[in-house]
Length: 502
Image (cartoon, rainbow, N blue to C red; front, top):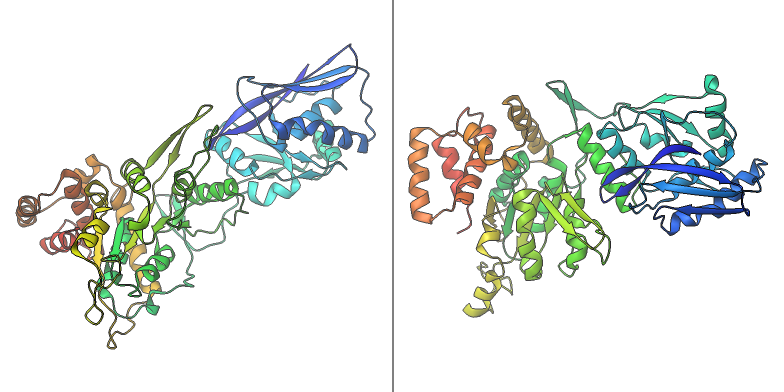
């Protein structure tokens, strides 16, 4: 019996799988056992054809392939190559223990990339469970971005066999290539960014309070809610926010590429944070993930590290809005199904937009609101107090006037974001202000005596919850960073309180 290492995806993480092949004197047959799903069972025909392309003759024996552990469901066409290698090299004394092998086979023996390969190898590399890896050559451009791998690429099955039979001439590639994007270095870690602003805040006329709130949200990754009449610039602001978000570490870029790969996209390794904007008619499963048997990823988990935008948020079903409370508070989401239980990361910037009333004209000075008080109350009641408590910044946007002019550009805003980003990391923070934990708030969000007095008054006057107090302190910390204040000043706290939902 021979065996070689491989792996399969179990939710977002990879699980190691040992591929074992045994040849038994019995009637000739070829079987695969070990909870192998359809894509693996079908590999028998691909493997037979690929082996015949290199003039390999199957022995007149029973060939049994076991995928261990046998109680773990496995799927993916990348099991083709390890199975074919073990069959082709059955009579050799090669030790495969140092290698893990992945690759889909074509009928002519060519090796092909598979959609889950990047996610599997990234997960294994992060857990330091992999060193030497054999992969299809067409997977090399993206796999080489993962640090810590010793890669042996092969274009065909024959080349993969030569890696083990002719080790002196085997081509080796060390992974971890740097990205060709501008970056800043803080404590030895590079953070990458782009200066591309296809959607610019300069396109928005007026709305200075919304632009200021957008800047604060971007600097600290604070959740924000825009309220205003139709056409005042709510969606425009939300769509421009992704381009001024903080720079990304290599780990964050790889995580984003992993999410792209799992969604079926080709990873571009661009330091541009994810932007997800599901429609209000989307199902709960498509937003949070789910499935009848296996837990699948949804918009909330795909937005991890980036921005999630809910336009016309009162029109989303109540069940979806209330389900947002856990990912917004705990930054993770647990999906439980019959065959799987998966925990997704949900650390994103949440942006929402809404009208002031069903017809949208409540705040208008030129149009008449057609809504009754009952309709307005019912419309706003769709957003519960616990959900609104998780919003850091609330902005009521003014109606457009002829005097409104463009003001600040996205590039100028991004320069401020960069400066504040450096300041937060140099202070020793592991998270940006908007995602600080309770203990970190007490350490970094310090108030002077005058500011503390104002906060105490606000707590009594507005009946602030502990969560609302923490949100206010985190926003005030970001405002102080923008103003280059070492501690939170009186003006910083007053401005932060102005952004509370009332």
